Length: 398
Ligand SMILES: Nc1ncnc2c1ncn2[C@@H]1O[C@H](COP(=O)(O)OP(=O)(O)OP(=O)(O)O)[C@@H](O)[C@H]1O
Ligand SMILES: [Zn+2]
Image (cartoon, rainbow, N blue to C red; front, side, top):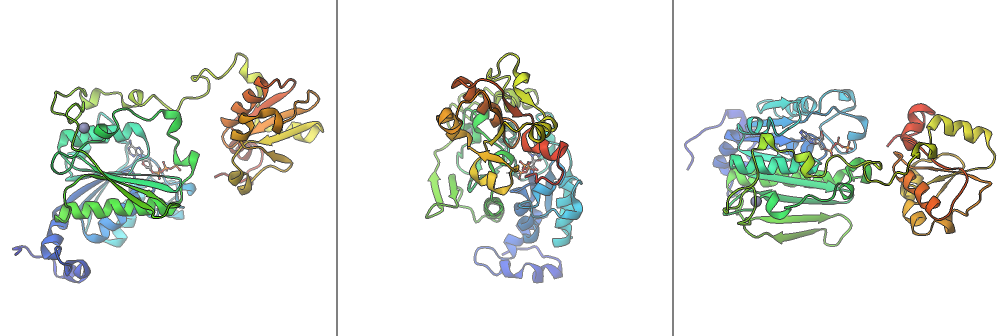
């Protein structure tokens, strides 16, 4: 039996969940006393925050350094068209206040960094990882281990998502226990690069809220598992039981810790630095800029040279969204597999490659040159993004 009492209005507001077996007044009082930090107010953070606020979690910290953009609204459902340009943490806080004005909301508009992570997260009972990059994942894991707090971690990309609670329960593993080494940066594409269906982040973000509510109210069984969601598979959910923490884990293992002071750790370097550009990958030959043209120059060439062929190397689905008139679609993977069967080598023809951002198109130039292509073979710097910015503002940006 609980000895506490809620404000009168709350019996009405939360009655539907308070009558659940195992929840009760007790559960509601626990939620009211709880504090949760949500790092990242994007695709995962928005739905997680929405349900945590609606359910009556007492205090919500929202940490995000970014501002709202139009391309966020497809999945970051607390933000609105009117709030484009304002910090996501502030936008999310405003939205939450409209759902539940009694929740204490603390918007923090700086990035979570090794130098501030311990201070920013120390005041909260539970931490949610709703971010999208490896350095922050390791930083959050190490911080959660050091602070002794559960980390409810979500990830989503394309049609797929993952959910895992780290550093929780009897001997629960940390992120480093499962992933001692980061994925190679060139394999870890961002949502902007590989795409994401908004509902998928909604599903994973909601599950993060659910697991958090279970932990707070004592409904969680305390066993570690990794939940894998794949929207296009049947059934779409798989759950993998996880082992206990690794004794040799450098962050949480019992055999002496090797991870240094968080504030002095270079997480970006550990994860391989920024996504390498083609120069640092050594794929760029001397005089490379001779093989490239700007979007404005491309427009000029298209207007003036009848012997031009423009090849768009994006996947067909992206070509279907928008493309330049007279461009031909040859997806990069097909081109690289057999360059000359798709693009006949012809010195008389000027060949230009374009893609979304100007990275894949450079690989296309390299592939055709390696296959013996001569004459003018170039790509458009900055791709269709640059075309939209510098040539045709009506060309869609996605
Ligand atoms: N170290 C960090 N501190 C605070 N917020 C972070 C940190 N790293 C990532 N984030 C935030 O996590 C959120 C991730 O959400 P999501 O991937 O849906 O959004 P996005 O980065 O805006 O997307 P896109 O890749 O389309 O630009 C972003 O709002 C981002 O600013
Ligand atoms: Zn560990």
